[in-house]
Length: 356
Image (cartoon, rainbow, N blue to C red; front, side, top):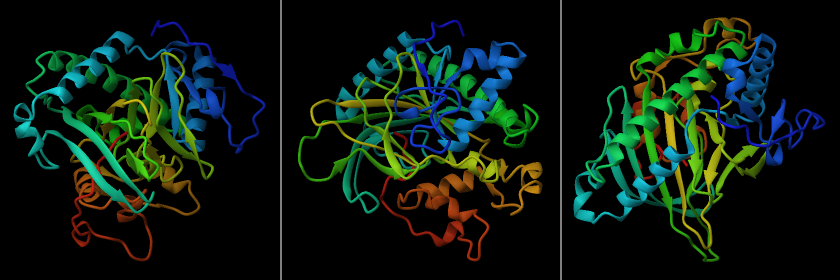
């Protein structure tokens, strides 16, 4: 983690709970910035402070930028170029993947649907590939495999290190979350998104408001902004610092933390004159892990256990078979009067397993 630190301002004067609150360093609109180099390699005092700031970012935002992360910019550029080649391939060379279903390891397609949540038509081209515990990749372009193998390994390591630090920020042993979610056998999916420009006046966007089904999501984009996160009831457009990556908290972190850290609600807008591209690395628990609040956190909560346990595989299937509706998928495990079951949710053609 010896990448040069991008310049960023400190904002200690933002009041806690204000629109731009952040624990330590922050970018535009107060979005927190976490220095992974300090978090992993600083002295004891520095690491302790960085861990507190990470916890604050997860609690206040569910979203932050990470710097000094060790993922080379050249590798990110190679990923984007390979995705451009993939999108431009003749349709017959992608036919098997276009016909794939939600459970298939590789999917390529165009998502086009109306969102009740945002009252807009949502459109994007996408590529999804499962990278762990088994690695899958489209055959073409040929260079994509080696690039994606390296990228998935680097981002998986980064996200698993963050999971350890997040565990510590919750007052748990550093490896506690990794242990209960069996992150050695974690699920990882890579998602490439392509949002064509749209200059019309009617409501068109990329992806409607939702939270991610996993534990943590890492995202970078091609220099065209469009990712928005919900913070204090307002949509905030995320503008990355040079060299930074976006990290979003997912549903499984909300469950395992017993609601202390909320899965962030986010969406993607389209640009009027430029194509927006993003690339996502999402890490979730082992597919067969039963995800539930860590016992110590539930015992220390006056309200007790706020979520019941569910296999991650079952949660994912529930979310993917449901119409995208903000964070409604969490209702299946929320402790309340009427608990939904996986079987009770009708199928919908809406893309619900989306990352921006």
